[in-house]
Image 1 (tube, rainbow, N blue to C red):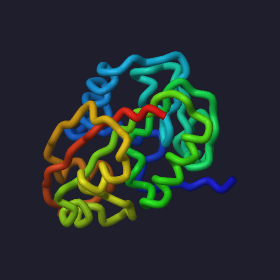
Image 2: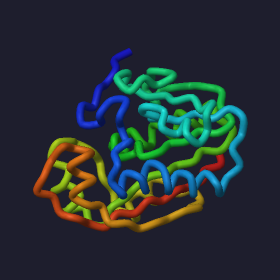
Image 3: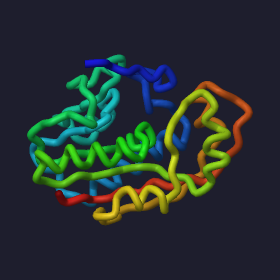
Image 4: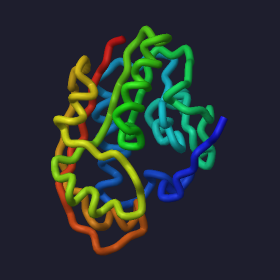
Length: 191
């Protein structure tokens, strides 16, 4: 299996920056979202990077293609198969093009009979989001575009925030960025 490393993602330190936007995205909003659902016994964190969700769900199984983040399982989530009660897909969809997103959910439907929790930021200001993301290639989406990819999902959470230059300095090690509005949405999907 080919693994992929995203140098801009800071390996095991990913998401642990001390700016307010990182704290909101990777900790505060996640804690709020998880309080709205029942956490079953066996939970998978698809695209789980460095296992940051273990702070909230200690036995969660992180699955990621980037072995530099030390996931529990190094695998491609698009083709991964496992026996889980809940799958969490958090801040992953912007790494995938639309076709890959559809492929991911088609694969999950083949084996998973439980719930899927999707947590994803979106940007109605795509111009500034792409301007600020100079050192990375991602597939950012508006709320409308995200919902079009998730038609059978029920939104359970939404919050707006200002994405600051400090966040981009920490996240991508760049200056000369502009602040813009961003939105975190969470969706429940019953397979």
